[in-house]
Image 1 (tube, one colour):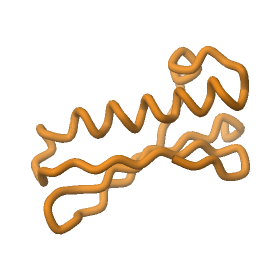
Image 2 (cartoon, helix red, strand yellow; image 1 turned 45 degrees about the horizontal axis):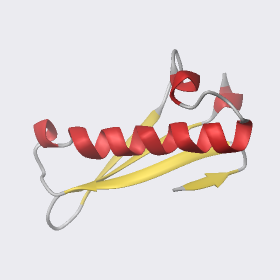
Image 3 (tube, one colour; image 1 turned 90 degrees about the vertical axis):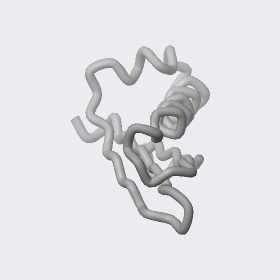
Image 4 (cartoon, helix red, strand yellow; image 1 turned 30 degrees about the vertical axis):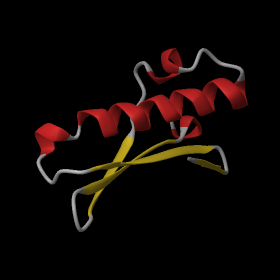
Length: 76
């Protein structure tokens, strides 16, 4: 996970190429965003994501996918 210029970003791997199997990776990435928000901004963490738009990128890997979520609270 990394923070870059006010943008929060978290990536996680899923070991399947089937979208129905990506839930845990998505949840870990969302938890990573919430954790970053709580640490940096002193916010509530997950509650900071309510009503926010997140950017999702899915990249195919040899055995599954890499899921990356990013959030720029300054964007809105």
